[in-house]
Length: 307
View 1 (tube, rainbow, N blue to C red):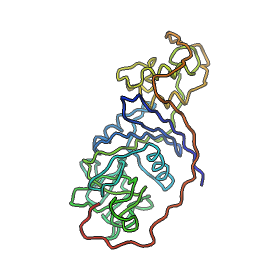
View 2: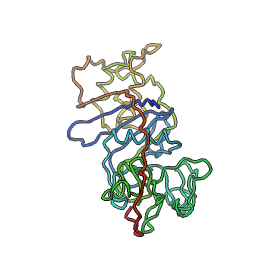
View 3: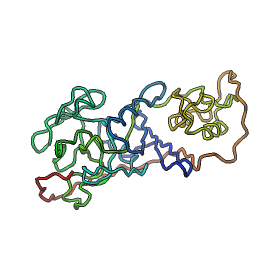
View 4: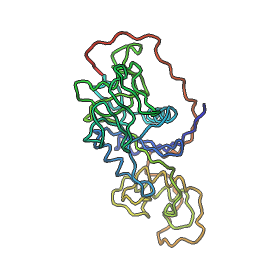
């Protein structure tokens, strides 16, 4: 099955040790934030991100295709955040929890998405836990998860490596792209989702020449990272910050000519020869979704859960 992803990859100057990814899949828009945060903080950050004046949310995964798209994008973003209580594997936050302080209605073993929809009940699959209706789930293949190890694991994350990392894959609790419940205090990367694609915006004409082109990219690049910006400086979604969301909006408008003269009274800038960013790439790539391989045999698991 061929799946197309549109990725906007922005690598900032060497003083900023971070590379985030924005991609589109299945009519939705996603942002990967590679800086690690606790789950509740990640949830608040996601809700503060605006796209077309609509707040984002931590990703809700509805099917295997979306799970695979998110997994591939996380790998492309080189996420490296580790959950020590999750077998020292690499993880990123998803939008699920069984902690009522994080999501109303949730309770131990009964997982809800941030939107308030329950998708799992009953704890571990091996002891009777089941999906709600036809809800998609992708817990670690051993049926060991979600195990609430030491009664402290209440938040949903996707593993990007197998866990425990010190065990052979064939005897692991889960493998890359599968889900685990880990401590909400773990500081992990996150995936933010908006349930639509970005729409063109007249504000993307930053220099007032009635066409969205490279000079507008130069203005956005020059002001990237500004936290108190106007739309003429690159804040295209009204959150006062110039960031990846604004880049995505600008990308959607590149080459567009305004139907009527612009009322903007901004100084024109020359065609840039260099940008203040070390790399600014808008890439379209196609990948073949790999077939999932599960181990044919599993070693017995010790009673104490190290994942």
